[in-house]
Image 1 (spheres, rainbow, N blue to C red):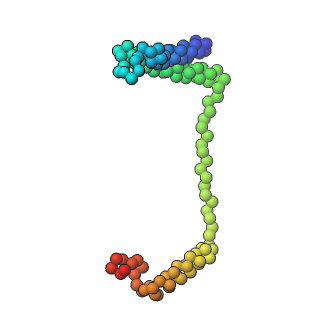
Image 2 (image 1 turned 30 degrees about the vertical axis):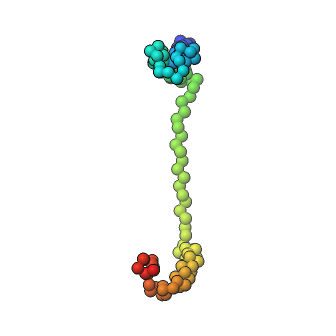
Image 3 (image 1 turned 45 degrees about the vertical axis):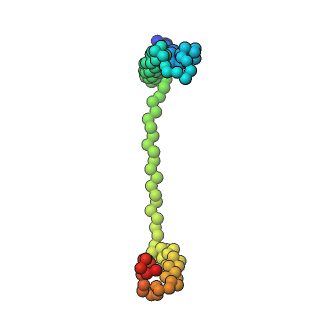
Length: 134
């Protein structure tokens, strides 16, 4: 367990070293401002990027190994995701009389609207006016 922990720490230090290699030319003034990257800057930056990526993969591997070790020792429990309950809507019992009561004001409003339109009496005339009927 100690070796695995030390491996994670060393990989973390390598990650920080890779980040330092990436920013060192800019932080130390080796790269002139507003100029194209020099050969040394390019070399240091991409070397640091490679070191940082490999070190980050190492940190992830060591952390996974530590977790597996803790699970094997019984110090950490593995939680299984609980299924999310799906709410089921209760069937709504509506009778036709309740539905008729709810729709009656709408029907009356439509009937009144249709009876007050000129050119549309008792179902005669077009429902929608076209350009020819204007």
